[in-house]
Length: 356
Image 1 (cartoon, rainbow, N blue to C red):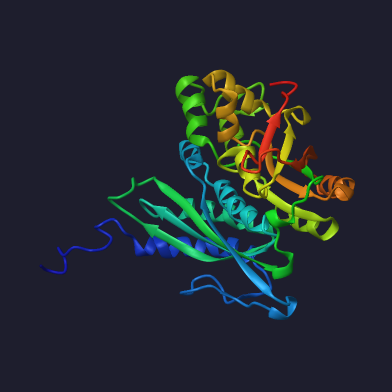
Image 2 (tube, rainbow, N blue to C red):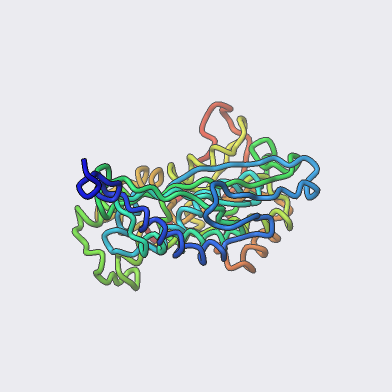
């Protein structure tokens, strides 16, 4: 086989040059999402992060891996790729902070059918923005080109984050006590869970166009669906510094009841009141257009609650003041009581939303 007719990597669908161009385009974004502990820059074989161990007596590392899910299908349909990276970071760092850990860095993995440098730049710009919002560094990552396995315009995102917490300060179920109060933090919308059902209802059943204006939202359907996930990491860390926080629960797949149950100890139950808040219009529209039953809604979507803090009863006012000052919608959602059946449900939702 002569050199002129021989097979090449580029002919097989992988462009090294396009990959190199993408790296150059994303460097300025990664440089904005940094911390003093970061050593070196983008482009090395591995990211280096200096752990200044004198800051902690017994440091414990926390790690979390996640993705964005089928919300990416909406971004692809609208050809808007600069926000799903924020969603990726939110899903990772807000799982870390539930333990009380301060997020240190995130590394991303982008799988594509074909490297399109400007699209990669848009994706990484969102990831970098998410890291800035979370106060962590973007410590490199990987872009993998998969011709023949993925379509030319297809991509998927995932990432891993690492945080650190003092061993004596790790939050969790063992800290929760009867009489503790459950504080809700409002979501910015659907966040990044339940999009398979949301797309089925709104796009397939209701046949709503993504670029169509929706009066209830005050914007297009696409804009509503692509609203980035709220990142609570800095808010939760600020709350830990000011109040007696027992634990947090990040409300993702499984909904409010299932996720809060993960941080409730045996023998205690969190009683939550639906009457304490009203979900945003997008949730009502999903329920109505898809005839989705309440139980299905509540186990699929966050229903307007993105993060929950369980705090001591003496610190309720302080907690609400801290979150309000940080522009996080917050309210008393319920309280913790002894369970009549130690092996029964660890969360109970009662009452009805005033408008839903």
